[in-house]
Image (cartoon, rainbow, N blue to C red; front, side, top):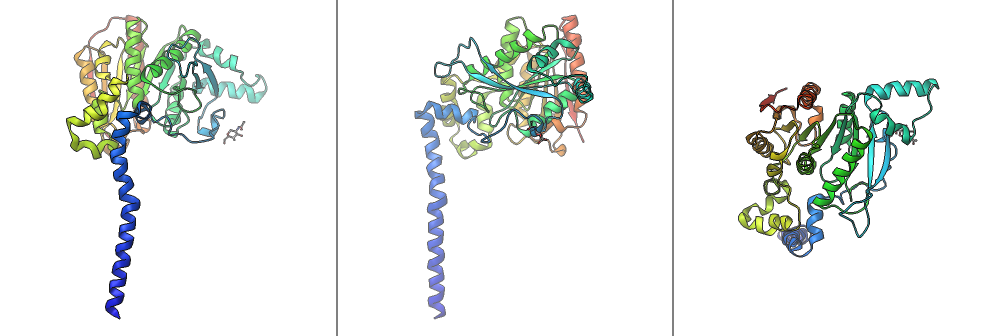
Length: 376
Ligand SMILES: *[C@@H]1O[C@H](CO)[C@@H](O)[C@H](O)[C@H]1NC(C)=O
């Protein structure tokens, strides 16, 4: 009896094991083969796998900035990309944008509105405010997946607004509530579009570019193009950047199962992307930058290893770009998305922004580079 029971439970255990094998392992193994196969055969899949723009929170309300944690007055608006050359199914994309006011301005206006001496701000008021006072403007380019409402991005807008900047945060085509679908050329066009929007409305103000993660790839190319055009921004901040597509893809946690493929991985995946127009070699583009550059990276970044940010810094430095590299020690726990929580960040940024202003005023580029390590 005991023995039968034992063999019964054994065969039951075996059946369960077998079932879970089919349920869990087979689909995984299937995916493992399917992903490279899709790369070879379906170009859209390939693009989406990099941009991850389909990773969204459904039914988001983009109009209420307060709901998403924005601490200052701001507005949501839609910007039709009139004259776009990279179209999406023959149509010009329409971008979703947030404009957050500098903290001191926001507080003053809020008090006036509350006291009844001023009406609530209209869209035209927000546009006029961009050039009304001395505040600079930061144009923010986010990383892949999700959109401008993401909590860690909102925390950064708040910090920049606290430093008394206007913040313009867009969703590239295909992200959030923006229409169309992404491509490298398309994202660069979106970047020019929002930058021109800012320049047209704040022609006398200092405009900065801030990119995070994938957004650093956008910023590196975009600022190189602006530099070629002779209209670089006043300064550029690259947060958690990478040096080039090859290195960022091979170091990404999602590509770990394929690492044993070695060089063949490049041919299967990375070369396919480059063929399709997704290049993102920031290390070759950064050498053209004609504005001061600040690179921020955390030593414990688990998505883009810090050594890739360091390589980007070295490429810029070697080319004589005015660049400063700040590395945050692992004990701060800032990883890939939380550099906005870093101690002393406000001081680091204030110093950088002052240097950018001095650089713009003098326009005498003196070679300088600097490395700083920030501990708790
Ligand atoms: C926006 O969100 C805030 C915070 O959740 C809420 O208090 C406020 O009523 C909302 N405003 C509108 C217009 O819905």
